[in-house]
Length: 178
Image (tube, rainbow, N blue to C red; front, side, top):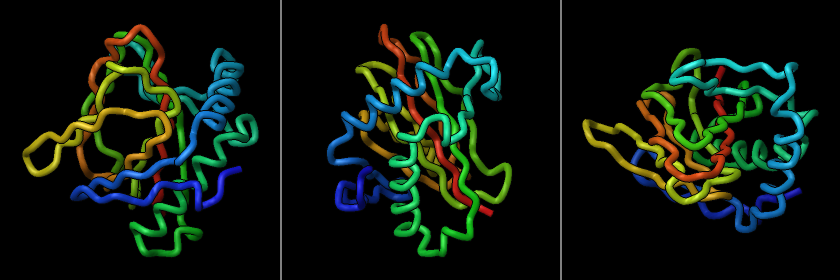
């Protein structure tokens, strides 16, 4: 299990923050292995069917225990960014599997009372689709890097470009709120 000293210092770029694990290879391999074992199960909840794929795959933490490292990192950064007692907040997470040719439509995460959204990259091959943040009539591009976490306010519109690699891109998204 990673501790807070394994987390990269939080960098701010406007309403977007960057963090991550200083060494993510082992935990990402564990998450990917656990995910692959479960991903074909009919027991998983999948939602948001757009562009020929389900954008969200929900797996309970007890079925994929390695994800706790990512959740703890998200909480660590959320405390710094929100400066609130996040232990009183709800936290939800889901996996986003993007096979070659897949992309994510423009959306926000403000359906409920979210305060902070995040994405953590488990597997991010080159050309697997940049995260595009639409901030103040400009677009900012963030290339996915395995082990990196991108955090932003939920009302910011964003999408993910098409995965033009020949490999799977796997990330996990988190929301913190009430």
